[in-house]
Length: 96
Image (cartoon, rainbow, N blue to C red; front, side):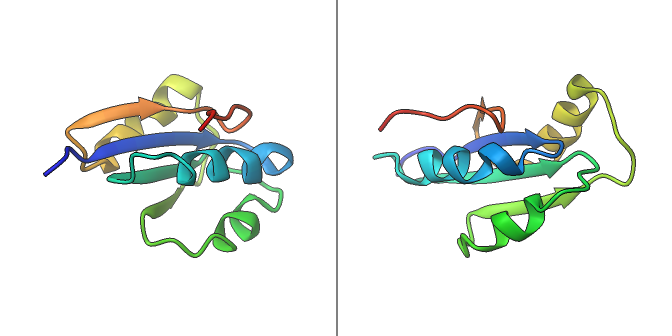
């Protein structure tokens, strides 16, 4: 069996990029992954956009305070289950 990869996406008000970012992960050939979506105190429609994907591999976490990126990444790592971790910022995407 292939290793579970935790793809960590940190987001603060990233609604403009979110659909492309998440779609690029879901479109990968390798499918044994979880997406740890760490919402760093967003006030935009990020949660609503994420909910449209309806994929049980996406795990949503919300921070009640705005943190620095490194702190938010560390919090997201604590939520991950994979044996490998990959980071993809919300304003980036992967090619197929």
